[in-house]
Length: 350
View (cartoon, rainbow, N blue to C red):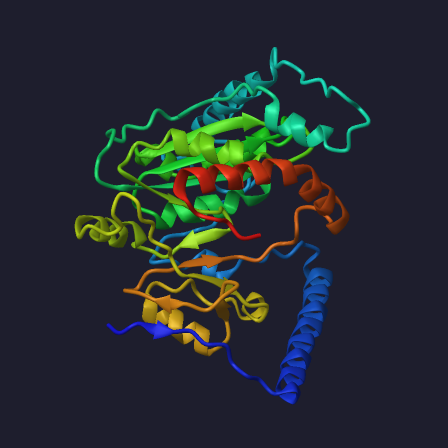
């Protein structure tokens, strides 16, 4: 199969205006229909993305603790004894993370970077490998390495259903949403039917989300010869693990090489039409032609039927706070660039 080069399209302004108008009309119509149905039925309507439920025959949706359940425990309802036992047992163990947790004291309260240093330097009480994975050490395979919080837990569960290789994930939990996270975990059969998922927990402490700490937590507890570092907002295509293992067996990448996976992002119009998640390159290209998705941030070649797909989300922090963080992190970044320069002879560009 030849490689396809993704190129940006030139769209006339009138065409864009017509498309925007079409989207607004659909939104307005949906708004009216929703409220009519709400008035007639007296019930709140529930919306579910088709692409979150139709991926190679596997359901990607997870019910909340108030709905019906189907997990490795074989439970049928939220009141089921086994489901409640799972939620209670797992929740109690996680809640112990806040017991006897040392409180980090900011050395200088007037330091605008104090909260950042707190997030970096504080010691955390964590749970490693909660379900005691049985992945053999150093086997020739690829571990999906990622991290998440409660707000992205559904993205994680979707990826686990599509990724048939080992997984190592760090979950950042708050004491007031432990039960919600655990309910989703206890309702996902893969955590109980598979023995290759390393699930790690860290308690929320401090103001900022510790990306590097959580990523390293998951990375350091992966067991395979190779790892696939993936932001939780990306979902891998079905069967990607097997394709990556084939690359390894052919000697790609070598010890000092990395394989970059082409990334795409859902377009705004896809939120209305809700297309199914593409299962292969042909379906991906068809959705691209229909403008349901587009390359993530830059153009590239799609080699040998491999890709990941990003779901857009709002920014985590506002512009002003981001500028403060950049200023605080500048000395650390310069130290990092110096290390790369001295170790590898490579000059990083800002």
